[in-house]
Length: 191
Length: 108
Image (tube, rainbow over all chains, first blue to last red):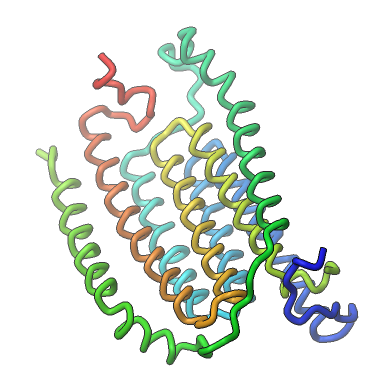
């Protein structure tokens, strides 16, 4: 077990400041997992979107623990504030009801057969992927490189606009194209 | 690796992102509507950026690069969500449904 990387490696006492930080981390993980479960399992799509927002809030807490408070803020702003609201708007405009068993098209044999198989097959595939990725993450001998920068907001801004300036501009173009494309697509077919 | 020191350990974050990824894959398979699949795809993207930030915190020499990459992933995910929602609205106008079982014109 010497390959597991912990920095620092010592475990704090329960009632010290670091112990409280550890407890809050566990609560954050619980929040994220609960949100993800709701997002995947809820029958009504509005509840799934609310679960997604809860999951992303917990994830922002985890990003904060990863020493990236700027990314955590952006996570709250972009995902919880923008993407979830956009999906809620989509649900509102295209009001799909996922739980509609009375529909006679869904009771034909093929589709019923598929729905009966879909749950266990999906669960086993996802469980296998989770187990494989976790074992991979736990068993790999990670190589730690010595630190060179600080990784604060100042460094992020400089890296964003000098080293990765080209990608930054490309992403700006992609966002403009996405805005125009969304407008054109959503307007097509309207009388 | 004790329970209260989990937040200082790299495998915790790798397992968390694996969990998010498998939730996303599960949702992609079981969801019947396109919006449900979009929600699961967002979970998968979040798992990817969690992985980037974890390796950025523990292994990378310059800890700014992983954060920049996570910001790029967020921008792409926001653009993808906007485009996907507008496609769904256009599809709903034509088919009066966003159930993936109804969008099978190319199979016939």
